[in-house]
Structure formats: C-alpha cells, structure tokens
Amino acid sequence: MNYIKPKVTDLNMADLTVENIFINEYMPEAEGDFVKVYLLARLYAETDRSISNIDMAKQLGLTQDRILEAWNYWEEWGAIKKHYLGGDGRLDFAVEFVNLKEMLYGGEQEEPLMIETDPEIKVKQVFGNNDINQLMEQIEKKLGRTLSTTDLQSIVNWIEEYKATPEVIMKAVEYCIAKNKMSFRYLGTLIEGWVSQGLNTADKIDEYLELYDQKFSRYKRVMRALGYSKEASEEERRIMDVWFEDLGFNMDKVLEACAKSAGVHNPFLYVNGVLRNWKKDATQDNRDVNEKKPVSNSVLRDYYNFLREKADREAEERRNQIYIEIPKIKEIDDAMRIIGPQLAKAYLSGDAEEGGRLNAELERLNEDRAFYLAEHDYEMDYTDPKYACTECNDTGTAEMGGPCPVCKEQRRMEAEVWQAERETKEI
Image (cartoon, rainbow, N blue to C red):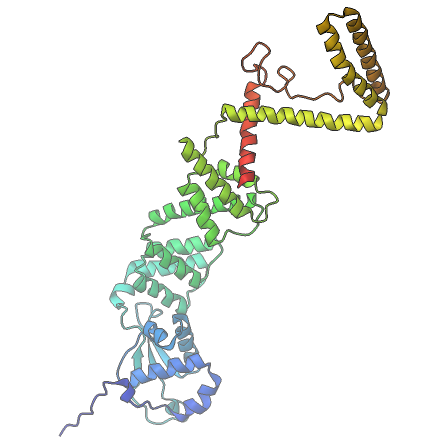
C-alpha cells in the first residue's frame, strides 16, 4: 500500500523546522534582515515552493541588494550553498540549505533542501546569449575588475525587469565612467530612466545626452550670472526651461535680465519677473521677444526732458556750492537778475541811453564774475548747465527745426536703455 502525505496549500498552515544549532549559534551573530531572509526562504523550500528575490524583497520590505547580501552572508557562514546557473556558473543561483547538524557532527546525509531564488529568469534566453556574455566581458574590461555576484545579478535584473538591451547597458556604463559616477545603484537608476523614456538604442541616447548637456551648460551659465555657485534645483531648472522653451528668450536676453538683478535679495525670482514682463510687452507690440523694444516719440521726448532736468539740477548744485565758497558770485548774480528786467524795459521804451548804461553794467558784472571764478580755479561756465548735445541743448530739435542731426540716433539708443531701466524698477 502506498501512503500520500497531504500537501499544504496555505503557508500559514505549514510548520517550519529549524535546527536549534541555527538558533543558538548562527542567529545571534546575524543581522535581523539576514535572519528574515533565511527563515522566509526556508519556509518556501520546506513547502516545495519557489520565491524570487524580487518577491522576497517586497514581502520583507527590503531591497534586492539587501537580499543578495543576506545570501552572501549565509554562504560565508556555511549555512547555505549556492548552485549557480548559466554557462559560466556566475549569474543566477539556486540556494541549498545545509543540514547544520550533519555538517557539525556528521551523520546520514539527507536530501538537500533547495529553493530557486529567481525561477522567472529564462536561462537559455539570458545566460546562453552570446550578446549577454560579451556584455559582461566588456563591462569587466571597462571597470578593470571582475564583476561580483551582486553586480551580475543587477545586470540580469536590468535585462529582465527593465527590458534593457546590452547596447543600452553598455552605453550607461560608459556614461557613468565618464561622469565619475560609477556605482551600480546609480547605473540601475539611469538605465531605468532611459528605458522608460523609450531610449532603447545608442543613437537615441546620444541625441538625448547632447540635448541634456546643452541644457546643463545653459543652467550653469545662468546660475553663474545670478551669482550662484550651486547647481540649479529641479524647480529652478523647470523655470529656466520655461524662459528658453516656452517664452522663447535666447541666452543673450536672459543674461541681460540677469545683469539687472545685482543687489536683489532673490535674483532668480526677480529675473523671472523681468522676463515675463518683457514677454508681455513683446506680445502687445507684436514683435519677437529677443528684439529690442522700439522707442516711441513720446518716450524720446520724455528722455530729452529727463536730460535737461538733470543738467539744470546739476548746474543748480554747482551754483549753490560756488555761492558758499565765493559769496561775491551770489552778489553778482543777484545784481544781474535785477538788471535783466530793467534792460528789457529800457529797450521797449526806446531809452537807448539807459539801455546802454545797463548793458555796460552787465558786461562789467560778467567780467567780475569771470575774474572771481578764475581766481578760484573755476571755468567761466562752471555754473552753467552741461547739456549732452551742444547743438540742440538736449531739446532734440535743430536750430532750423526738425530732429537734431547731431544726437538723434545716439539719444534714441540711450532712450531704449533708459526705458528698460524704468520698466525694471516698476516690476
């Protein structure tokens, strides 16, 4: 008669047998995560089930790298044996739980308790593939070292989970080496990101990296123009992308806005405001954002008035200075202000004799004024307004009418800058 042992279908109803030697000798020395891995895997093995490292990591709340560390630990302590799969015997492996009593004290050997850690990996497809074997050799050559079991398992995971091709993996290795960021954790993140974006060939990756490097260079230049030495944050990169890609500004225009941020508490937000204001003006004027804003005749007249008021104000300041330093000059100026209306009245009334006398008095006062100024090392016109254009005295109008031929183009260019500065102060 044959006897059939009922098969347990619910793991929670199964019993786990663990040697006391494991509890007394092995468990106290092990990290808690490693004990969890051992016990969970042994539970599956005793119920003739398999579990992948991926599922084990999810169930225990650990990383796959941590699972592999646990297997390496238990192998070093002799609690398990790894049976490697694949052509070169270094990639995926099954775990054999060692009979600790037999190992330490001898006795009859029992049938090994085995568990496959990654049954989903197709051996023929991955390990027998010449492209994969060549990939391993190329990576080892690039790194100048032999790949560890953990490294090999990571590569297999990239191929199986991310569906990464050897071409993509090799490109990622070369990129990380060039950037001096060669860690398998970073490498896996990079490969996952590339594949998720549809970058499945070297040519597509090259195009992506060229665009990325251009953007990185752009970010760095703008941050330096703003006085930052740090790298741009993700939010700052997003805003800069808006400047260039959505608003349409070129680098020269962005740097022009950056130049206006000196001394500002938050230059990044300030420049963002300037550029958005420029975009609004360009839209209203129906022109490209990178074209200079044309100066209207109204703005040009305002600028001429600004220049004249500035010249008059500075002349007034110099007169007040002279009046303090040379009081006699103020007396002369006061006398000349009195004579002026009298002289006009004499000419209007036809009194030539009085007009001549007053005119002679004015000439004498002017000579005295020039003498006192020269005596103190000042030019005769020191207190006169200093207009930028001596042809039109900053009126913008020639003597015979029409725009001043001497300064009209220069004043228009200056007015552009003046207008932009005024708008910036209003932001």
